[in-house]
Length: 140
Ligand SMILES: [Zn+2]
Image (cartoon, rainbow, N blue to C red; front, side, top):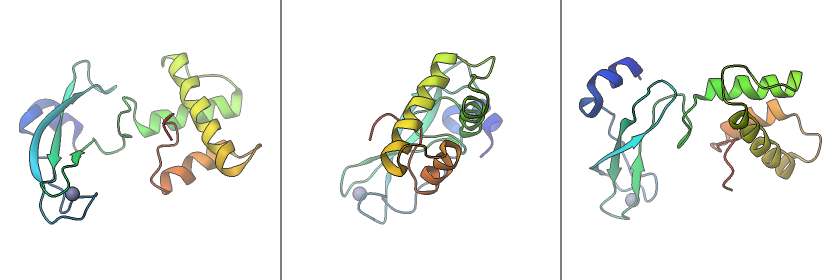
């Protein structure tokens, strides 16, 4: 995934077409326009390719590699912020503090629910990603 190429080509960027529908495993999905999303790497919204499954009707939205669905900041950035708050109790400078504590609170809630009080939050962050869960998402 080349972010700079995406920034240059915008709608013309050659997104990969999913082989199958992740919902029903149908063999073919169709292009379904773009969703314009904000990311930290750009001041303008970026067109993100969407696909639609003709069988079950679900819409598949791709996302840049290294980003959680519906998150503007990269996974690396979020990881660094979590790390800082866990280790030093302080948010990282240069990134909105409110957003960082929002991520931290969401992670803590998930970690406690899954692993109990006193869970290792940095470890929980990685475990949740490994399970395909967005660790800092509020929605469960
Ligand atoms: Zn489907």
